[in-house]
Image 1 (cartoon, helix red, strand yellow):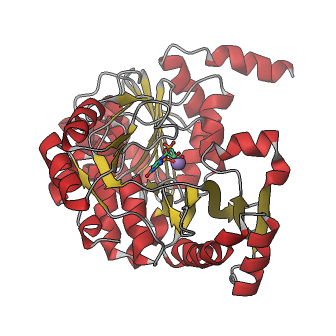
Image 2 (cartoon, rainbow, N blue to C red; image 1 turned 180 degrees about the horizontal axis):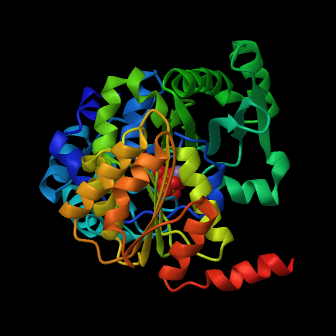
Length: 431
Ligand code: GDP
Ligand code: MN
């Protein structure tokens, strides 16, 4: 691996941001445990740079964001080179985002076409230029967490280079699976037996074992949720090599890896998530119309659930965490009203260490600072809730309402949004 690949210029990281991500559906959201909402997905070039640190062979290359830089890098690496669109979706090749170039003119032509290209809603702002490889065979390799089994799962297949979901569906026996107890780790013997079970070309066995052990180390020590190589290739001269990299890091472990901050800068978030992230708030955009603010991820999830249950549809999931002072509350309200689909706002606070009167003062002050058109419904319970409600009392109107329970507040917020909470209540009663 060349040292060039380890030096993505910072300005480029900041530019590698795109504005669209698929929104999480509510069922997806509910599978996430509290605090688990944020994941860090790496671009291929970042994944390869990480792989290189663990000794996984990757082609020398560099990320660039202009055509002249692309030519410069290609001249330096030597032809032929591959020009690869850096977007966090699969099937880039089919979309025209991966091209081989034999000359500087071809690099110019392809880099020009790929930079700015739209691939499945993602705009290409960075291309990765790497030395082209000769391919004899393409394999698939990955490690991920099997939550149901409470074990790590390794998958290896001699049928690589295509979507693994397709292999799993059409030819499940073509994937050799291995469960690894995190306490035991992956030994070389077990790894070798696994590689043999996958029936790769025998020429590839030693190289594959070495890469898989390194990939496992990258997965565990790097605190990843996923490390995937597709394709892992065998070259005609018998070397095994990672031609692609897909890595998802566990955001909860970032404190152990100060160098991961660079990935945070290039995280693909939608505009609302970016806005919230800058204010230190845990925010996930959803497709509905009731804005949800709650303290604690568990309560936020329950709030999302209950809004659905009374016939509404949440516009988001916003956890303001422990503190509910005016700054936090104003920030949360700003994030919520930046979503034009929001027709009402449900603030659901259960005071614990944060006392009811602090929350109430936070809300009152925030409302003086942020102009809100949507009606707001508040449920305030827990520590010093009565004191908090007394503070809110003089400010109540048909635009700012207080309800005694979470269920009543959910119904009220859906009604005020023009949704049919009354209808769903009747259905519940009829059941
Ligand atoms: P993805 O389709 O978005 O996952 O992109 P990949 O990085 O996996 O590349 C897709 C395909 O392009 C690979 O399966 C290869 O067939 C081909 N490809 C990528 N890099 C090279 C290369 O260096 N040489 C050759 N011959 N083909 C390549
Ligand atoms: Mn791939």
